[in-house]
Image 1 (tube, helix red, strand yellow):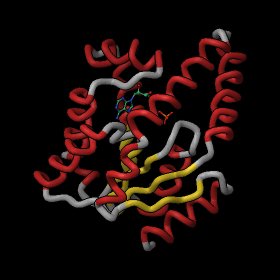
Image 2: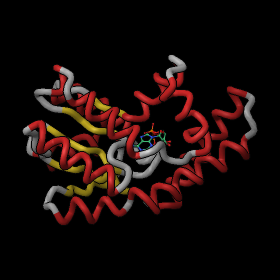
Image 3: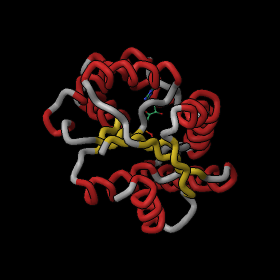
Length: 192
Ligand code: ADP
């Protein structure tokens, strides 16, 4: 099973990816996780990505395309994968098409988790406030960043919905339903 999870910050991609890993026994491939571990390891890529990520902007297509291409070559990705957080731009989606063709792989479905903007803003601003309480960071900084991430999603990532609809791969699922219901709807949509 080869899946992409698409959806705005706060739509529950990470939670659903974890449930699907258990259900299908395939790895989650999260560009956000890989970038954060590069930051922790202080690699040149991590150092370069940190400032961009702290603002809520997107890391360059070249960097994330490289990460994904390498990750897809690892043994555990042979039987399938769940891409979470990639692609995030049309050029990334086009690069992915090339990579998969080269590697002789085909996507099964692109799952769009839908959520209304108001609920999302409320969810992610609440999360930012809780974060600020535990880390002592300024809440308005955090709120600004999460709002920026939502705008970046709407401007750069939302066009992927039409891109994948055009390829007949898109399955839209209501991301506002309870977690287990969302998982069940995804499984039903991908046929298993
Ligand atoms: P979320 O909390 O929405 O799941 P992620 O953990 O996927 O966010 O990503 C966190 C940050 O990492 C993004 O805001 C962005 O700066 C960077 N990032 C992750 N994936 C990509 C990508 N495919 N293209 C560009 N930047 C990315």
